[in-house]
Each structure stands twice: as structure tokens, then as C-alpha cells.
Amino acid sequence: MGAEIVAIGNELLLGETVDTNSAHVARCLARIGVRVHRTTVVGDDRERLRSVLTEVRDRSRLVVTMGGLGPTHDDITREVVAEVFDRRLVLDEQLLSELNERFRRFGYEMPPGNRSQAEVPEGARVIPNPHGTAPGLIIDDGRTTFYVLPGVPTEMKALLDDAVLPGILAASDGREPVVQSRVVRTVGIGESALAEMLADVVAEAAPLEVAFLPHLGRVDVRLTATGLSVSDAEPRLAELASAIAARASRWYYGEDGTTLPDAILEKLRDRGWTVAVAESCTGGGLGAALTEAPGSSDVFLGGIVAYSNDVKIAALGVAQDLLEEHGAVSEPVCRSMATAIRERFGAAVGCAITGVAGPGGGTPEKPVGLVYCGVETPLDAKIRRLDYPGTRDAVRERATLSTMGLLLSMTRADDGPAEVTA
Image 1 (tube, rainbow, N blue to C red):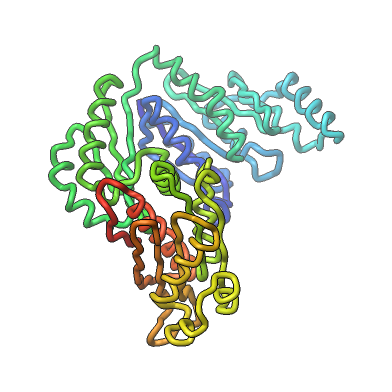
Image 2: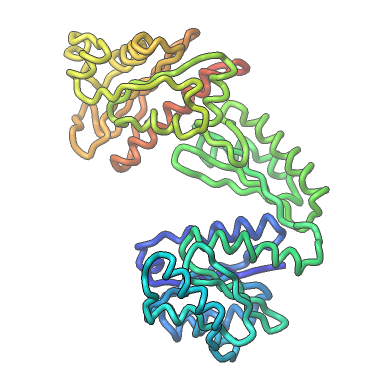
């Protein structure tokens, strides 16, 4: 079964709101065997919206729309859907009563404009929305089914889980899903280098599809099984994921929902090590990233943001002579910060970052983008000099990611430290 998604709203076209809804719907549909063939974004223009919805109705059996169900003049989805299906809008008295009661519970009288949210295309089924005032709608003509959902992400996701996905599964007569995916995650290796390394593995992957998804400093490898039963797809996906993980073991850190902090904390626990961080140019970004993972308090002790030289001296004990001789952005100072944070916090592992994030402050000798990151463990210490292009935010994010990659490699007991850069 194929589907189309239509995201509606001028704010999406203007770039004021990022369309995360379409990606979420596509992932959820894929998990139940429905592949999305096309996603369209259209504004709050009646003629354009009518044209888009007419086209998708003519070519697709399943359509999910999001947005345009509010009470204001630019919320036209309900009316246009009715026009496309040649249905009248009729007032649903029960729905109107529920809307009035919702406002009453909040201590307000329902504004007249909200009455439009109780108007339903004739023959459509209402999807109750306990999280907002815009109910969803299901309308079909025997060939095409429209699921019309609100655009507010929390409301859309709730209605998708409560009604849309169960409804599609029920209509499929219980057949098994035909789209299964798995994601293998790597850090510190570029897309082209990883693709070349895995070329022979990918060449033998059929009928599975393999896609390389680059992110800043990371590359995900998505494996997709299409047209296979669950019982056939799952072992094939597992076998291919294992082959990729083995080949790229130096950079591999997990699969599917595993994050880099998750992988790091697991390795630290396995070692029985704790960690503390000393940061300059990242301003606490490394500590924030590591503590995103649930259970981080098991191993993460704390950190110091030593932005100025005075704080590096007073809080970390970095020698003033060292700063004067080499400067704050240097290998010796980064090494001293990593050692000092271990001692100050009694941690097994100390991480340090110092650099020039920009946009100003660079010199010919130490340009914007120069970063030193270091990790010291009970077994070893490594300092990396990294030169990053890009904006201030990109330099800071890359520095954080590179330090986490180095930390992960130095906590591994199997293959030892790896040269990890983002």
C-alpha cells in the first residue's frame, strides 16, 4: 500500500516552522507496511490547496493531511476537503457541545469562530481530539481515504496513534507489514569513506536497500526491507547490520535509537569509570550532551566551564606560565585541563576542550575553527588538534562531537583508541 502526505500552512512555506510532522508520519506508516510515495507542502491558498488535494485523491489510495483545521479565516482545509469530495459541510451538534464544554471547563465562553471546528464534511467520521479543539476527520469515497489531522505536532501524533494507524491496520485485514528498517550508527568517518569501506557488503545486500545518511560528524546507514514478510525481513536486516557493524567497528556505536551519549555511558559503566569535563569554547555543550542520556548520573560527575584564562587558573589550576607560553588554545593547555578536571572531581576520565569558535578572535597562527580536544583515562591520554570550517555553532557542535567520539574510542576494551574526528 502506498500513501501521500500533504502538509498545509503558509508558515511551512515561509520557513517559520519546520515540517517535522511529515517525517514522523512517514516513519510511522513505514512501520506498519505503508510506504510514502510523495510528500507535498502547500500554503493556505484555497485554489492551490484544492488543486493539490484533487491530484492526490486521483492518484493515491491513502492520504494524510496535516494543518488548517483551526478556527481562523486561513484555516480552510475542512472546507476544501469537502469541496474535493463534493460533500456539504454539516454542523455536528455533538461535537459543538463538546467544544462548548471544553471552553467552559477552562473558564471561558467559546468564541464564535470555533463553531467552524464542529462543521464536518457530510459522511466523514470524526477523530476526537482530547488534546485540542481541532478534531481530525476520516473521509473516503470507496477508493481513496483521507485522514485529515491538525497540524500541532502533539495533537497530530496523538490522533495518528489513536485512530489513523489502528484504522489502516484494520483495513489491511491483518497482513504483515512489508516495510522494515534498521539504522546502523557511526561517528568520526565521512560518508564517502564509509561507503567505500562497505562497498562489497552493500553490493550483496539485495533485496535490502542501503542508504547513507550524513549528519554533522556522523553517518547513519539505513537498511530497508521492502516487499518481504516480517519473518523474512528481520533476520536479513539483523545479518546485514551485524556485517556493517563488524566492518566499521572502529566507528560504530549502535543501532536505531541508540545515541552517542548512550554508547559512551554504557562503555564507562562497563569499565567502572566516572567522567568529568573541562570546557572552554563549547561553553558546557559537552556536559549537556553527555547528560542527555538517562542514567548519566551513574558515571557523569560534573564539569567546569573555564572560559577565561583566570578561571582556567583558579578553578582548574592550569599554570599561568603554560598559558603565557602556549596560549589558551594549545595542546599543552588542553592536556593540563584534562588532567586537572580528573584530579578536581576524582574522576577516572577527564575530558577537555579549548578552541577558537569565532566569528572573531582568530589569528594567522590560531585561526577561527582551531580546536584542541583531549581525553585522559587511567590507561592513556590523547589530544587531538582539529581545524573546522563553518559557523560558530558548527565549530562548537563539531568540537563536542569529536570529543565524544574520542571518549568512546578510549573507553573500548576491545579494539583500543581510534583516530576519531568529526
